[in-house]
Length: 98
Length: 371
Image (cartoon, rainbow over all chains, first blue to last red; front, side, top):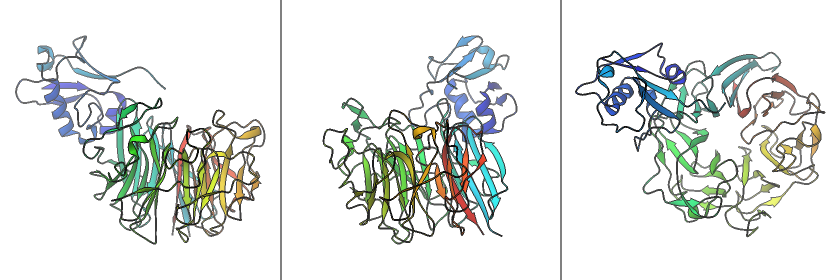
């Protein structure tokens, strides 16, 4: 079970109260977790990564275990503490703008 | 009794303002999509409860929202806007080639005959259509591909397709406008297009009379006379009596002919409204006075409408999609400002009152007249 914490506006958009808990088949990666997230919440498609290029949107970042995973390969295994559910994968928006 | 429903898009959410036909007591709901930029909200003419909204954010990109109950509840529908084929390039501000990149949806125009068909005008400029209620979108790529596309340049606000006008007398005819390319028309439902900018004169571009390259801010049409168009260009208010084949200036006695909005009275096709703005470098009303100007002669002769509007220390702007008219008798006129006010006139502009004064900056105003 993977725990995902989304920014406020995406929780509102998807009508999510708190953390999202996802079951992901195989070895979880950023790509497979986002695939599972978007499958459960289709309204999130395009809001975290571009629908065509699959690139992370520039003002969002991925953190877990106090590490920035934003520039890791989307197919790299996630940290063991994330795959075990001990730590969440955090999608965070840049603190910028108004 | 008649009702009106005013759909307001702002920098930080959407608002729905409703009143009975007197248009005096207003109910305000919102913000919907709080914190998001709502460039445009518009309802279907054939099913007024079907409403579409363009929701966007610098963080999370573009969403399209759809309501089936007049804006009370919403569902996110399709937001995948993929240019047809290899997008190619247009010109960047410095004249160098720049790839076409989707940024946002500026304008949503529901079909006049089918609530599930809706057009989207996007930045970088292109026209898309959905025939399944917004679930999927296809580009009408004949517009970008008609020939002049590689020469289009963005205006200061981006290269946006901001105006879509459907001809009620001819399903094949659509008018669109792009900043800063100009106006275009199709007569075959969007397959082929041609520029309709003859008569426009823009002193700030290399060829002031060029076929494309004009910064058209908005175009309006009265549905009973679809061949007559009124245009607020960057500078100049223009009129065409031949569906855009040629234009003549009708700025007349306006205090400044820069501006963004233009609209036509619901029952008087020769009565036109604009809100003059001081200049392209000072985007607010001149002399600290918020004045709507009305022409009852199809242009050239304009009168200032001031009753109920601030006439001192006012420095707001009124953006291109932020004016609308209802179809009651007397015609209601509505506009929203960069200061967050939405004004209504229930007497065709003779007098005005603020419906709300303190919304986020208003990007768009549309109105539905409900039986």
